[in-house]
Length: 276
Image (cartoon, rainbow, N blue to C red; front, top):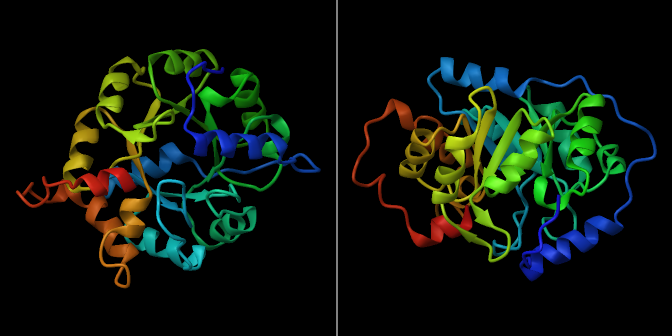
């Protein structure tokens, strides 16, 4: 589906690059690690199911993170992450298919390929357990979801509002992410998830994306029905620039439901929400 709403210039630039990017030369077949099973294991272990994101940079972040993606992913798993997301978009996020390949070889949890995939050939670039499909940007959503499944990928269909949710459900989506970031203004509002979640069928795996920066945010999204949380910058940026402990930052969120809420946890800064 497509939208007539104008996109932020940075997002339009990303899409222009994606339209020109070639796909793979040969069809990929994947034996995937199950995301729903991984989320269930986290729940059984008393962990909040978090998909932690390896993100070198982004249009909403300052600077580039130079740490090795494998080191970051392993630290996130040590911190209790149920799955890992790896950016493969090169121009605006500094991602590469090779980084995803290396991460998937190094960890034993499901790995999501996060990119702007617009057509079937874009699937045939690198093996992953899941692929992100952004409903707003795909003309034939049902066709791309089906093509992903035929290869063994678990498609995570991202939506932002009720209309996109209906399109995702009609396309047969079984894993749906609600992006709290408005791609027209790049603003984050956690109420977005809260407005969409009640309309998602119970048998759909539901993921809250963007803007989750604090234990209070975790509790809020879980109370609204999130089966899992996709978190990037809040894990990689939380703390002094030279003292970022990715494992500790992940654990700070994955262990929220083991700890009582405190006044400190409920204080979420504007900057944290913008950078997540």
